Image: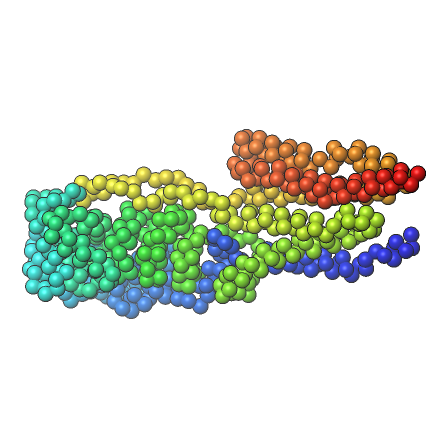
Length: 550
């Protein structure tokens, strides 16, 4: 007995391993990095020290652009920017001093042709730019102004007003064609004033020249329709600033669709486009993730410009924080995302392995020596790998979810005379893993770990008994039902989870239900292959040796 006690490992070994493993697990759990999602702490760190929404609004006011500033101010109020209250007072003072600029959202000296026919006594409020082109006189004035332009792109756009092969508009040259004529003039004026980026200009010019050459309006009519939607909702400077960030007619189409299906999110979407200077990336994010994507943008805006840029650059959903946040971890992840991801799961794997080996040293060291290999270290490594894989699956809620159609998915609409049909909304749920699913997986895993320990203790009990080898072999055979118990418990857990899901007591999730079965299979495989089989082989060999010697 004294020799056996002396051979036991020093407490510092298994206690040290236990503490080190727990530390690695805590570090891995707290490291805010995921494969297909963003942790809020990353957005907070990315936005640290960058301009806020209120700062952007002040800059726009300083540039005499109250129209965009008004939408950005709404976004600041929506994200509870601390400076939003003071900014509202500044905006009201600005508006009272420059009432003539508010309808247009700013000022452009070349807008004078459009002002003809505007009632000077009308209230000074933001006015959609197409409202100025409702009557004939402003359109005539603007047409004469543009006809003097020497820009080939402007002239090509003006020639498209002569086409009669439209499908969604009444031709501009016929009665009822005022909407199309107004949009054509607005597009040409945007080109003349250099309010379109080079890539968008290039695409529009190609479409216009093709339409004039073939006599078919084609895809250019779609662009006119999208500009009509935006021009009916945004004033002149708001529209100009937005289009400066649009890289293609497809982006304009996406933003027009978003203004129709999600008008309540327009300030957030508009502000995000100005902050990132990329309407393309913002529109793509909203189309991909729908209403949850709009809420993610709102969250990012509350942290600052850097957070918005990080979000749209990653094009990933925001997940709930899975553990405590710390600034160093978030900063490290932002600087080294791939290395941080490796360290997270390597740390979890190492932590689980150290904990399992420490428990082996504490509980089964003497038995492991007597059984000579029936308790191999590989068992802890395999179990640690399996638990790490399970942790990886339920810590990545977006990994196994297929991308579904969102509320903002672009749909084909056929408007009449420029009126757009309302797009039906599709209810969709964000692909997140609810707490009941996580708790179910953890409970099933803990049950199987307990069953695994019970089986090891039973093997150790048989090994310690002072009985003949043949009797030990029969005792091991007698415990076969116990060694299969993990599988029985796994099946029972799966059946229970499915029943609870049918009754609506927990969220319907097949991962939670079948994880019980998976854990049961793993437990039984480890017990019978890695422990029972080697020990029974040893007993059989000893029995054969005894009978031969006799």
